[in-house]
Image (cartoon, rainbow, N blue to C red):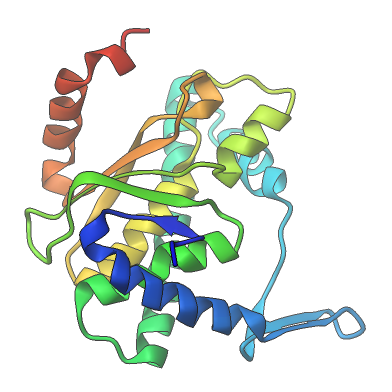
Length: 227
């Protein structure tokens, strides 16, 4: 049976299939209690947040917190805040899942992340070749987030973006991988539907190698960046 909540290279599909079954069972234990203002999934407390409030509106709020900066500087500073938030949440969620299911292999720990990501409404995840998820400085992930809640929110709103907007998506995914592989990694969105690209595409690697990977990818795929 094919995967429904994530797309990955063939060689790691079996691990993600196991993760899909595990996480799907986890989310089947949903308890909505409006009378007490609580949502529990598998006895864990969750909350629902309107996507546009957390993406478009929150970014604009953060930018207004930097009146001394020009618009580009304010957006850069605000984007970092959103990335750091996502990164922290991703690490915490990964730690919780890894503790509960007692997995030790880094790929197995990673596998629950994209499935959890899909079930919580952040995005679908498509991990592409030639990704190399290894617990060392050669860690490299190339992946897409179709239906990113951030890009969907920008496209639905009346605001226009000429920049990549999926900062929390990048933060969450790299936070989960940092926790799972015990290697500090970050992610950068290089293509984004918010600004007219066909896809939301990310590169993830250790911080000191991220620019190297981005420039190499852009050189090899100039047709994606012509505009």
